Image (cartoon, rainbow, N blue to C red; front, side, top):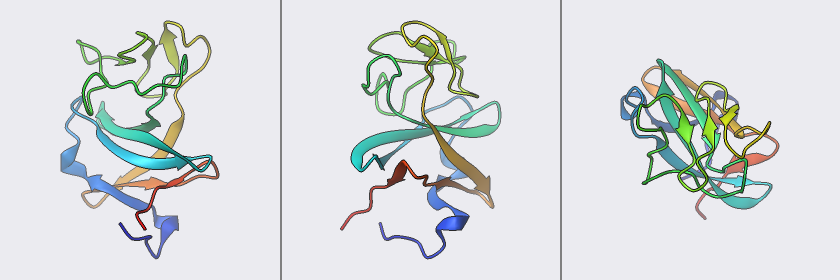
Length: 129
């Protein structure tokens, strides 16, 4: 992957059609505080949301299988290790050992059939050399 010329417009993440409603998430690599990390984007109630793939309780990846983050009823994001439950719209902890902590949000947008993500001061692209 090469660094895009226009980061203010976002970095291409995946085609919109790759994210089915309450389906499998698209996982991607980032650098958080210059350390490798995974993130994910999923479609929930028609909106694309993205978060760092780290449970707020203990910093471990949460998916059950690659890209599977939602509980059995597809209502909440659930950590497969600790059972912490998060609201998919906000990343806020709903129940479990996450207390008042929430998921780290990644800014995304969707336009013209493409999902884009926006690096922040703390979360940057993990570009291949």
